Image (cartoon, rainbow, N blue to C red; front, side, top):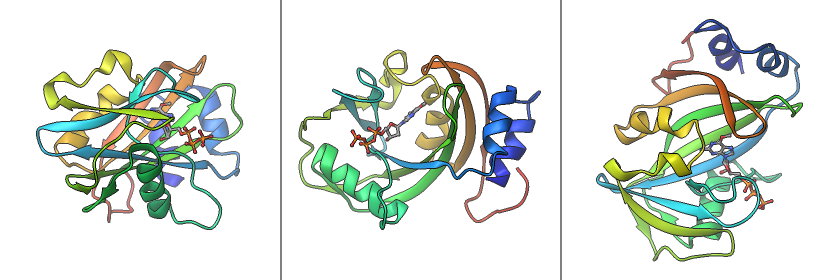
Length: 185
Ligand SMILES: COc1nc(N)nc2c1ncn2[C@H]1C[C@H](O)[C@@H](COP(=O)(O)OP(=O)(O)OP(=O)(O)O)O1
C-alpha cells in the first residue's frame, strides 16, 4: 500500500492511527464496490442489513478466499442486485482506516454502463436509480461525496479516508490517477 502511505502523509498528514495501520505490515481487508452508471443515472442499493445498513451504496462485499477481486465484484453484483455487468471496468481504489480496527479496508471500486438482467431487490439491497444530480449523499457514506465526481467523469481515483465512531469522517486524501501509473501520487 505504498501509494496509500504516501497519501496518508499528504495534505497535512493523516491522524496517527491511519499511518500506524498502514505501516503495520498487516494486509488490508479486501472488498469490492460496483457502481452501475448509464451516463445519466447511477444504480444504488439501499442497504437493508449489516455494515452500512440504511445507507445507499454500490453493490459489493468481501473478497472470498480463492477468488480474484474482479470475480468477487461480479459475484457480489449478482448476489445483491441480480444483474451481470457487461463492461465492468476498474474505477478506483479506496482505503478506509477506522480508529477502532487493526486493519485497513481496501475497497476496489468498479463501474459498468451496461448489464444483463433486471435489477431486483434482495435480502441485502433494494436497488434504486438516481439521476447524477440527485445522488443522495446525505444518506450515503461520508467519503462518497468526494470521489463520486471522479467516478461520474470516468477518472481513475485513489483515496485514503479516516473514520472515527465508524461513520464520522475525520480526514481524507484523494488523487486522480492513471491506473497504469505506479509512480508517486
Ligand atoms: C467507510 O466508508 C465506506 N464507503 C463506501 N462508499 N462504501 C463502503 C465503506 N465501507 C465499506 N464500504 C462498502 C464495501 C462493501 O461493498 C460494503 C461492505 O460489505 P459487506 O460487509 O456487506 O460485505 P459482505 O461480504 O456482503 O458481507 P456479509 O456477507 O457478511 O453481509 O460496503
